[in-house]
Image (tube, rainbow, N blue to C red):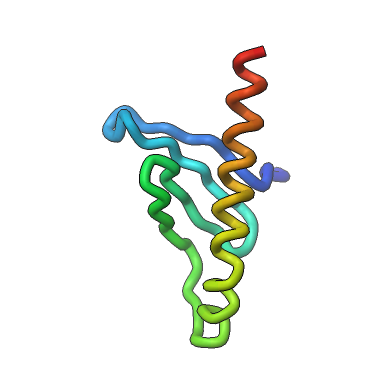
Length: 75
C-alpha cells in the first residue's frame, strides 16, 4: 500500500486538537493546536542537528497540507 505523505487525523478524546501525520522519514505527528511534535524515529546527534534546521520546514508543510485539505472541504 502506498501511503500519502500527510494524513489528517482527529480524536474525540482531544476535541480541540488537529493532528497531521507525516508518513515519510522522519515520521511524526504534529498537533496544530499547539505545534507539539511527536517523532516516531530515534535520532543520533548528527541527525538531531539536521532535524533542528528542517523542523520548521516540516511544520510549514504540515500546515500547508491542512490548509489545502480544509479549502477542499469548503468547496
